[in-house]
Image (cartoon, rainbow over all chains, first blue to last red; front, top):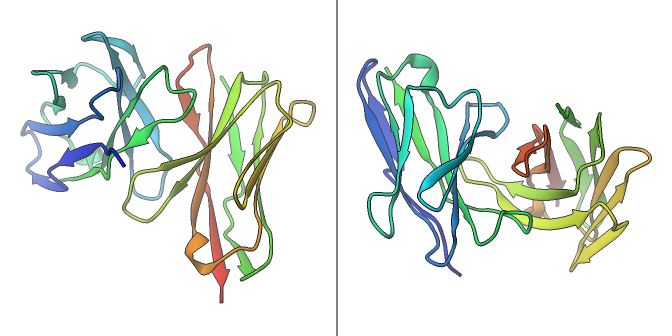
Length: 114
Length: 112
C-alpha cells in the first residue's frame, strides 16, 4: 500500500527559530496538502499545492508559512519565527485528483516549540 | 461558512453491537461528505465517501447515510470489535472550496 512519508516524526525547536517539515507524497498523486492539529483540537487545513503552486490556503497560512516542492518527490512546509502556539501535529496529505475520493495522510510531525 | 457538529462525548459500546456516529452540518448541502478514522498520534485514514445524490454507501462492516433534508450523515459500524476503537472524523467542503473541512470527531470505544 503506497504511503505518505513525513520526517522528522518529532521536532523540538526554540521560539523564534525556523523549521522545515518534510513530506514525500505518493508518487502518482498530483495534489498535496498540509494540515495541522493542535492537541485535542480538530484537523485544520493550511494549504493545498498543485502544479507547482499554491492552489488554496487558509487564514492560518500567513506569511510565517511557506511551501515548496524542491524536487520531484519532496514537499516541504517551512515555518519561520516559530511561536509557542505553533506547537501541533502537522500532517501532509496527497490525492490523485482533487481529493473527493479521499486524502492519504502521513503519520505527521509533532512540532514542539519551547 | 459551514459548521460541522460531531458528538464530543465518547461513544462506549459492547463488542458485537452496531456503533452509530452522527455528523451534522448547518448550512448548504455539500457536494460530498467523507469519513475518516484517526488513531492517537496518527494521521486520519480515509474510510468512505458519499456524494450528495447518494443516500447510502456500504463497505464491508461500514455504512454511511446522507440525509440532505436533515443535514446529517450517519456512520455505522456493524459487529463492532475492540480494534474499531478510534476517533471518527467527518469532513465536507465548505465556503465554496472543494477542500474538506474536518469535524472535531467522535471517539468510539468498543469494550470486549
